[in-house]
Length: 156
Image (cartoon, rainbow, N blue to C red; front, side):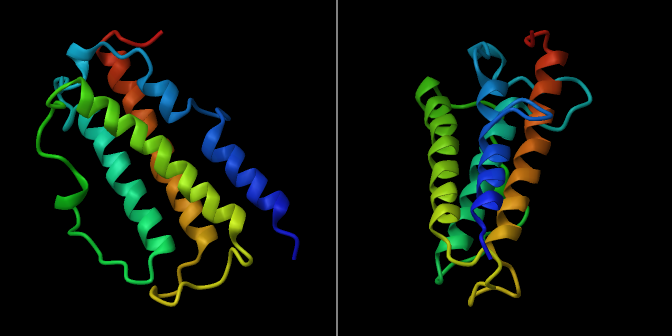
C-alpha cells in the first residue's frame, strides 16, 4: 500500500490552517500580560492550554516512538497547576517545544513503513491512530485558545 498520499494529508492537516487556525497562529502576538488570565466562567488560562498541548503532544510522541514508554498520571500530569508562565523564557520554550515535537512526530510518519502496524508496547494503537489523536487534540484546544483570546479582546 502506498501511504505517501496519506502521510502528506496528515502532514498538511498537522501543519497548515485548513478549517481552523494553526496552534502557532493561535498564540502569535498574544500580549504577555494575558497569558495567565483565567476569564470568568473558564477553567483555565491560555498558558495552561499551551502547556497541556505541549505535554499531551509529547506524551503521544513518546508513546509512538518509545518501546519503553511509561504512562503519566491522568489528568494531573497533563495539566499545569500554575495559571501563568514564570517568565517570557518559559512561554517561548513551551511554544517552541510544541513545534519541535510536532516535527519529530511528522518525521515518524515520514519514516514509517506501516502506519497501521500495532505498537508492540500498546494495546492495538498504531501510528495512524496517534496522528489522528494528535491532530484532533491539538485542534480542539487550539480552538479554545482562540475562544479565550476573543474573551480577552486579544484576537483579530
